[in-house]
Amino acid sequence: MDDRTGLEISPYRVFSRADWAKLRADTPMTLFQHDIDRLRSLNDKLSINEVEAIYLPLSRLLWLYCRAAQNLHNATSAFLGKAERKVPYVIGMAGSVAVGKSTSARVLQALLRRWPTTPKVDLVTTDGFLYPNAVLQRENLMERKGFPESYDTAALLRFLNEVKSGRGAVTAPVYSHLVYDVVGDTVEVDRPDILILEGLNVLQPARLPKDGRAIPFVSDFFDFSIYLDADEDLLHRWYIERFMRLRDTAFRDPKSFFRKYAELDADKARRIGEGLWNRINLVNLRENILPTRQRADLILRKGESHLIDEVWLRKL
Image 1 (cartoon, rainbow, N blue to C red):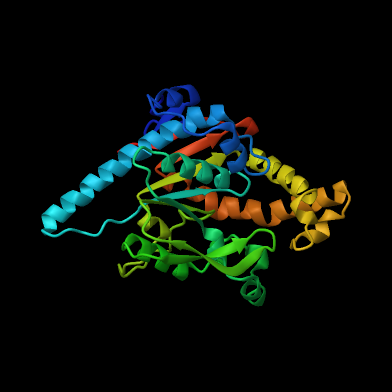
Image 2: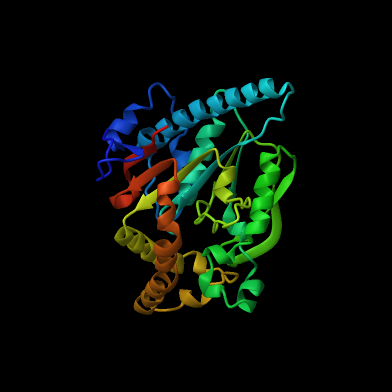
């Protein structure tokens, strides 16, 4: 473990992969190979060893934090002299396109659900809060999809406010990566013990008003936040690799928004993927996503082959 991140003063404790793995203690492994295969996204290299070394210690940490949050909730109820409604513990997960957020979020959900107390753990992605393609096209924002302005932030804030108020049967819109649009379906979140919210820009702050008015951020509703990180050249490589694999798989579905790319030869398809990366995803990473990294409570640093080789934990 190192308390420095290249600076003399840092708000993080930095753990090597080996040092972080030791913090698993006696946390039992509750996932099997068939679970890993089901949870892993296209192009991710998730393995049992990765879950044991990285996600089991994280699961243990979150169990301790959740228990501490419940004790704080009870203390607040005692102070106010009335029983306050129990609210979900909300975990935010941010990071670039192609870094593996979806896999990490699903693995974390699966592990948390297998705690001895068998909590109810829900997972929602912010993709469902993107404006529909018709709106983005009308506002000339299709090439800004995934940028902060492409989201219905007001709807996302309402959703989180209702969840954090302890309301039941709160709904979130559903996004289809196949048709590349919000599809009109909803997913219900009904008083879970834990909610994981995964998305590109969930740690993005709003512009602060000069008059001191209360302007909520999405991250204001988080109890804990995670940023999945990797060097830019790795993210670029992983994005192109995934694009080329999708060209041979999901893009071939007649319903796919990207069906037109499936019939292209490899060189032309690669050039299109490079264009999408440089024109959209790289710009979003540099302007909006990466600048939020230092706002996270935990940073998982990925190296080659999608393996996490360093963990940064914010000091309390």
